[in-house]
Image (cartoon, rainbow, N blue to C red; front, top):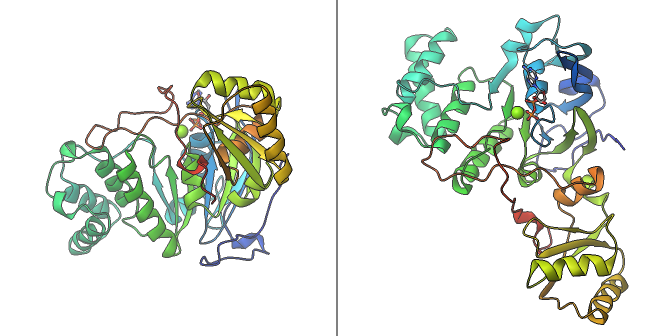
Length: 364
Ligand SMILES: Nc1ncnc2c1ncn2[C@@H]1O[C@H](COP(=O)(O)OP(=O)(O)O)[C@@H](O)[C@H]1O
Ligand SMILES: [Mg+2]
């Protein structure tokens, strides 16, 4: 199943061609981890070229946070090896911490302090002088669109503001490599966009990023490459475009008036291995190789008297990829919360349907 590519396709990014292992800012091979005998990572391989982003995409419980914690030296591991910034994670943890910024899945800033006080305090912990710490705090507050709220206690911040402050905190020391563990989980769409903007800024500045996500669209939008993790194994690794190619070049997406019609259509097309219903239950997506395929499908539906409301062609979405790889739908990310609610929406507590804005009929 697994394949590996060694170059990125983004013309506007650095590090397009990778030939030497030392060009990888982050590299892991055969990482293993068990908790009390239960295997959680079963040989994870990752390679992130300098100045690029890898999205580690997987459902809740797949092993994303465990991988991040191991790579950031916060958790010992049982097998395999890893380097971060050229430092061996097991033997040179001090070096790894030196090159690393980490934003946890759970915000780690102090609620009682103001945003500015948090950043200055962390700057002081990094041994920046008082004036330097204040300057750096100002700069980051500005960059993360938090200047207006800088002198308010963090407990008054919205979920999106907290996440941005948390990310700013991890950037105090301007690390060349950062890990972002589900930075937008539970955020509303606007806050997510703002977070994406600052992440894109970091990439443009040359930062190497390992980002974990349950959002297919996030991986697709931001990352040079995507590694899909399921049950402690990497089940696919490539560019988003390459992953999409694995499920055919085009997909036809049919929209029905009701879930009953959509289910009937699934029965008629009889391609349960490659066709699947979207979570809204009224859209059916299936691969097509030739224009004739579309005609056959429509003819079969007409013959069975299943009315079709809409039809569109799309490039396969990552959800289609996940379905092809695992035979199940991609995990449901937590429903974005309203900005202004605490960051309480956590993975694993969620059973809401997912909407994929990139799985619509528009070609990508
Ligand atoms: N400290 C721990 N003790 C026991 N099991 C753990 C611990 N941390 C994580 N796990 C288990 O390891 C698996 C992977 O967890 P995690 O890496 O947090 O997944 P993800 O971040 O992809 O949601 C889960 O089944 C989780 O329950
Ligand atoms: Mg996690």
